[in-house]
Image (tube, rainbow, N blue to C red; front, side, top):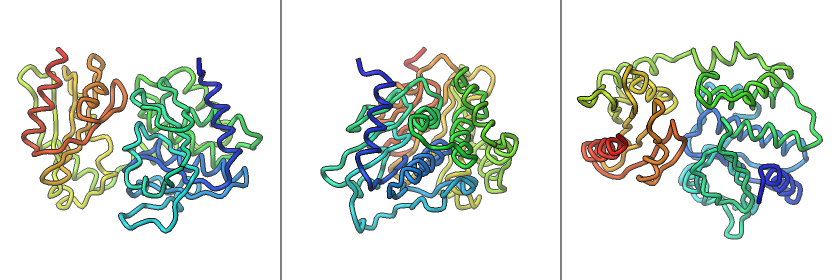
Length: 325
């Protein structure tokens, strides 16, 4: 049986046998994706490797404090000037999540896939997947300890950021004893926990407040009170001056209503596509629901992109959720 420990060793060998890497995370990267990207970049720099960090979508501005975050390239639809043979994918639950960065992959590329999503389909040449890890950053903590590198505040802050954001400030059900032990060790390396909590979890922008107000004004619930949802359109984004990063956490509001089992956030992308974010209070596996629409994620938090009109998609998703009772 291929164990987690063996997968870590295989990943170590992958890093040692190549010299030029492309490091990518998922489209519209969140805290864990960005922190995992720079963590891998930091490790590669310590090993004397050359690398490029890239993803599809801008990184959230509040993540700019992370080591070399400003060097993460936001890919456009322009053809790449070159392609890479050695790829490291972090926090990408399936290959489609790399988005347009796939155009930078050589046809004979080898891929190291590091991820914590239970819906990961093991698309890599080498796969380090730990579905009970709270964040990809938690896996990277184990991975970095395989190498003769000296931890410093920069990389410890990056790993801590991934843990902090993917556990909702150590409040979600994925906050395991190992998460707290790992966080404690990172604090010993000089991480400023209170500062990161304020910056990443408490501080909000004015556009963020405005778009939240708009989302809550659209709140609807089923008659039995078990499903609640909100909607945001492109017009709402423009009117509020909001960016994608301002939408983080919106889906938690309908989920947190007393009696609600599933909270849903429908973000209209265009006239024919909607991004659906799903959150469960515990009784419903929303990852399985998302997989029905080609998406994925975790039991309590998942998402998908659905083609079609908003009204039709709302009806379809609600119907699927109602099959869970």
